[in-house]
Structures are given as C-alpha cells and as structure tokens.
Length: 97
Image 1 (cartoon, rainbow, N blue to C red):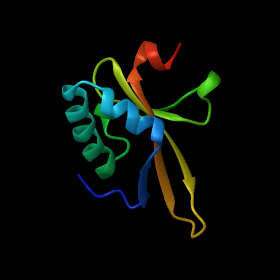
Image 2: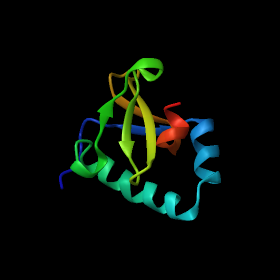
Image 3: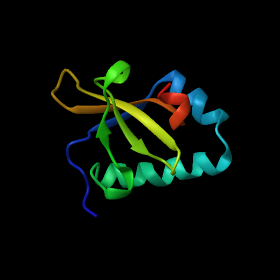
Image 4: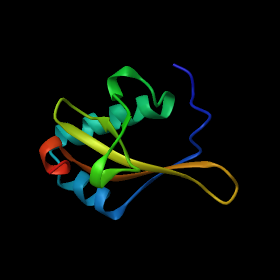
C-alpha cells in the first residue's frame, strides 16, 4: 500500500469519540485496523468508501465490520490541506434510520 498524500489531518467529533468509547472492544479494534487502511488508501476495497444521500448527504461512510460503519466529512483548511473528520460510529440500522 502507498501512503495517501491527499489526507493531511484526521480529526474526531465529540459524538464520534463517545460512540467509539461505548462500542464493544472488538469494534474499537476493528476501527483501528480500518483506520490504518484508510490512512494508506481511502479507496481500499475493504472500506467500501462511498458518499451518502438523504439526511446524510455531504458525508461519506466506510465499513468497519459487516454491520458497523464510520461516517466522516472532508474539508480543506485555510492552507488548502485536506482534513477528514470522523463524525459518527454505529451499526447500519443505528446510523441510517
């Protein structure tokens, strides 16, 4: 895998950090593993990185496990560098009600 030069910084919303803290240990471990793939290559097939529609339009989602997802947003900072902010973590049914 090659390093992804497009992402300069990764941040986490307060909501995401609370959800991560409450998640089962297996999910917290799975997130760390998926994050490593994400840092190397956002389009890695295991991530199934895709844009969302409806109420979550403007966000993107990656797979953590078969049922768990991490939702994130992207923007450019004042210096034109890409920042990714993980916003929400949960099961498919929790996030997409």
